[in-house]
Image (cartoon, rainbow, N blue to C red; front, side, top):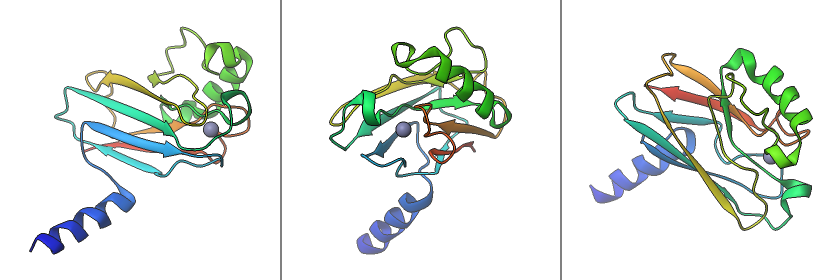
Length: 144
Ligand code: ZN
């Protein structure tokens, strides 16, 4: 029974993870380890922790985690490009940015905590706004 439960949890972890605290990792490649993050609507707040498991510095292979509406992803990423690394490639004060972490390099981690109260939709987009990453380094936040 315990083995079955463990297998079930492992299988679940492959595709989705329903919780209020979520960890996502990225290494020296342009990819997260998850393309779907699932959180429960009942969460008062959600904390996303991004761990960079690689070794390259943040200015060469930095990663962050940015949340926006799916339809805003490209525009926010383009605006973030102009904002530069000093702004974590996120346009300052842009209301389309629903949550974001800082940019981290190898061996570092960062996190962001946000409320679901102002996120009424069932799905949002998350992505890394580091230049050249967002076209493939992205996923879906599902609120269930
Ligand atoms: Zn990245």
